[in-house]
Image (cartoon, rainbow over all chains, first blue to last red; front, side, top):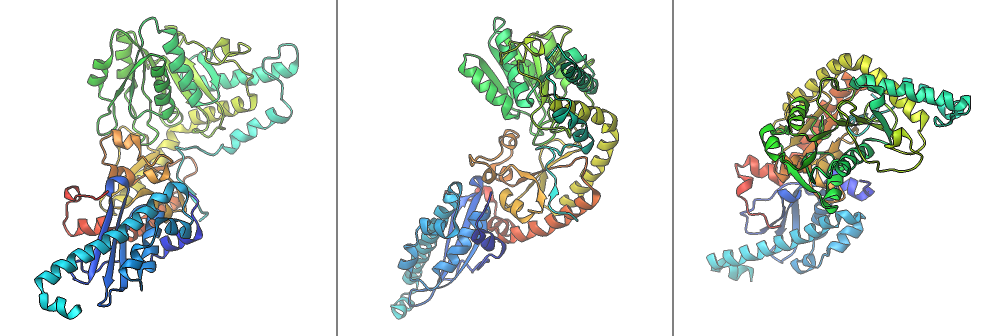
Length: 140
Length: 401
């Protein structure tokens, strides 16, 4: 498989590799894919009190383009609001990395990972807010 | 160390320089058509073709007149299976094979199904070997042909041809064997083995690509229907002008294999065992296929929690092949490993190393060192490895896919 320079760069030098504590209420975790399909991506976002993603981490089991797609989105979501992050499209990822047609599903998975991480963050914030009404009032 | 290192001899081998040298004159000066009976150019070429036929026959211990030249093992498989199925169709239209056969056999079987034949595809045992009892049960009164490969291309396991062939004889079933991966690796004695048709090729035994042969037994006589029609070459079984230089190359390659095979296999076994020991040291790695009934040239391993293609990228200085879906156009993991009952995940994580004549100990040392460094690096990137380390059973996780 002939990969673009950008895929190779992300694969050789993955950005924001690692993990946040998934129990931290400011963290949202999205895990998509399945081992049987050959791809599992875990994207984590850390959201500050103004609703901006201030940091991100990933770990990926998969081929070179799966690793590159998830590494790239950790860079892209940083500094974005949740709504802005949700607007990232798989086609942008595929275009940026010049993914070959057979690898487009890797960019689809990366987009799904963003959505899953945001959903997880929002769900947990809602639950956390109910459990800690005072905290909720402060942040509102 | 010269990089990259070639450890994909099961895909193809380089042409041995001694072979290439023998081939050259037949391109430029001894260029006659072996079918030309009226002048010395033709006689010279015919003599070379017949000498090569003897060399090929000598490696598998058969009569030279039982060798039919083809373009390679794929054509031989087609000619053998279609040819015998068509010829013996009056006996019955049932065929038997194994799910781990080469695609040249499986796709040929599929074509025969479209023509009205019925095919039984047997599951191998988890170690890749054929279950003999299951095979015997699969043979029916209307079974015309059975096809089982000698050495599996992905996992290198050696099937028990003597026992399988004996069952076929007992039941009057024509027995075809794809031996593309066997020549020059293990002894083949067709005077002893009850095999009726055997596919051979040159390019996995240090000969050129584009040339192969089909062994067609004469005693008891086996008949096939030609699939290629033309000038009636090869006693009508395979028409087409013979490529003299290719045939000379195959003959020389097989002659060298006959002389050097025993010593070469011992040397390669030592290197393969060293590679195996080194890689087992990484931990959470699994050998695919039976290790005992296996050619020493092959090692197929799964590296759990990492995906095969990304591992190949990490070890790009070593040329290997993977059973990962990501290396195929179909996005399906290796059908061979799947047939062994390996999980999709381990099939995705598999790498085939195949060693050969020009593999050196320094290359194996380099490979062990590189892989031992890269597997932990990729596992650090893998959420599956992290979950496994945390004691999570990945089979119990509900994956959102």
